[in-house]
Length: 275
Image (cartoon, rainbow, N blue to C red; front, side):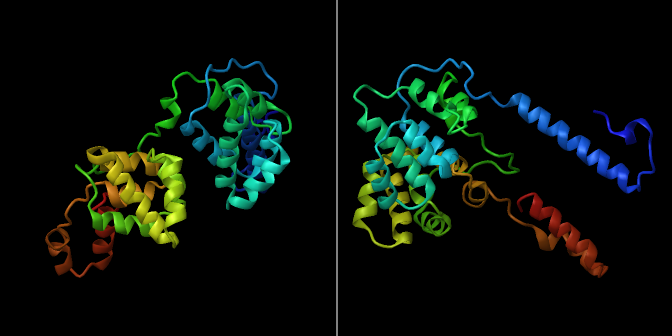
């Protein structure tokens, strides 16, 4: 339905004009989202084979709070569900270990078809995730998250110990980042059991990644892992080259005029450029 203000134009400062336009754009946006959303129960063609650890890791980030509903659709016993909930903190860890448990208790190898059918079920209501993770061909197309548009390139080589120490202070979910950096669960479990203190665990995980990957533990690979867990701020702060600031030279002329508004504006421009 076209709003009346588009057929019989009103003054732009008229309240009814704004209200009608906002409702029209809201409904139009909703129609586009509904058109792009897969319908629950539709016939999707699922991939062959079993979901990889990378797929389970990414899926756990998106399922999160509804993991118990998905757990029951995957026919995991309630006793296992309660044990997973007691042993792990946070929806991500609980969901990830639930999915791992699902791959372990099956008599036959778990399939994308089983996972996709469970995600499509009306109780779970996530046909979008069924299509995203169980239908696309080529696992890396959604595992590899593109880097954000940055004004500076990635640094060359490997992070040094001081940078790893600083990064450990900024990381939140260290296990999630460890999996994004392609460390295996036994390695992460060993760190979790042997080391006390959250900061020490974060630091140990990053050092283990450096040791396990060797020359492949580069800034680019670190940026890839940080991108998967949604920490693009850390990509900019730790993985990108920063231009050397020539602030005193470029501001010398304007400082003599004592126009501080001009100096402040130039500082803001340099900050946006990553100087």
